[in-house]
Length: 318
Image 1 (tube, rainbow, N blue to C red):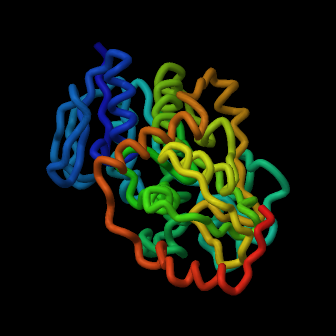
Image 2 (tube, helix red, strand yellow):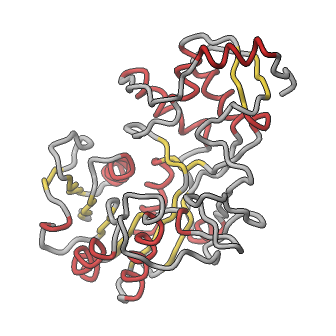
């Protein structure tokens, strides 16, 4: 039985990776800094990057690698592993003007973003900030890829799945559960920020484990639904319909204009087969949310303001 170490295995992506590998017959050790549930069949080890376990594993997956320091701490395990995967982010990509997903000016890409797209320069400022997140991820990527270890770097987009925090799906699901008669959608809901199911990321991890190598792969769903499509899918899962209203105040978590779509050609060449499209995979998060309703993020559900927009005469032309 092959043995995998999943660092950050109590989180959204790590939990999905652990479940996928266990289902494929792997032995899984999952690390976490706090005592949280792990998938059935996994062994939990309370540890952070400062006190990672020793030993040799067939696969090391780091779902919590945010800095070059983290990368240096996990590198000895990855050097000794049969295969290794680091979860990065699309936040590393920049357009021709140097704009990225966390910059004041939104990036404008010419089409689907490939792995050859330029990235931010590496940096070591606070990684838990809009300015520092991408540069720190780039620094971690470069350290691991330059090491010669068999590391696959995965760059997901807007991740969804059971345990998501924030659970972006809640933006539309709560409205549907509250039986709101309408939904406001900026630009008619045509904004696109490519979705990445944790289950699809896990399937790509398993694919990389079976074909070790040094590479970078985008990790997104096979489709890239716009906000209008996402709102309809989630409302449908809640058994609700509403009037869709084009209104400039209708921000939602996937509103991205110009759109961001990740090119998945390279993953397909490796033999990756996704677990499903957005509509198929988002059911996991919706089911989880129905059992574990989250706190409402500030500013997401200002129903009086939305009602005022309707009284002011928003267009009904989506």
